[in-house]
Amino acid sequence: MLNLSSSSGTGNFIRFSPQANAWTNNQGEEINLGKVVFDIHATQTGWLLLGVGVRDWQPDATLGKKGAQPTPEHKRGFIVTFYNKELGTVEWSSNGVGPNMGLEQLYSACATELAANPNKLPVLEYKGSKLEKIGKGTTRIPQFDLVAWVARPAGMDAEAAPVAAPEPKPVPVAAAPKAAPAPAKATTIDDDDLF
Image (tube, rainbow, N blue to C red; front, side, top):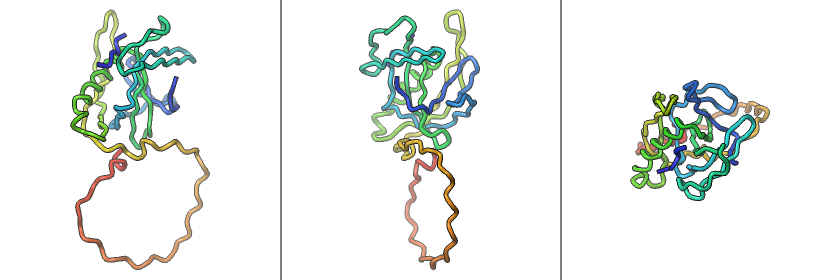
């Protein structure tokens, strides 16, 4: 579906390392991925060249439709966007065999339920990785469970704010008399509180 067999970005990214079987953030710190909202509509496929100090992304004109390979060093890859409150909005990109296989499985599972969940995004839970022999070597394929569909969290579109000096503490003010409680009604959970 995504045609992932064998430059853009926000600066806030995560990586999956099959060799270390670990996720890291843009600071190189290992993280626990847990649950994330997946912006399935922003998925990109293309040709990705990664090297020391080199990242060249050549997106497909249409999702999963291979364009011409720019150089023999470029490999099939992807860029997706995840979000939760702890990580913020992050980009995950890769051109590795294991991550490509993991995204292919993940995207296929979500795409089958997409029409039944209009205006919603899938919530995924990272469940570890599966060791698999590929050719003469091995890789790890990230495994995700699709656990829910939610409205796009407001925080997913928030721009990263510059770090500012702490606000001064407010001066206490006498409390106003409390109003009578409103009658009970059905509550809705703000998905942004969950992610």
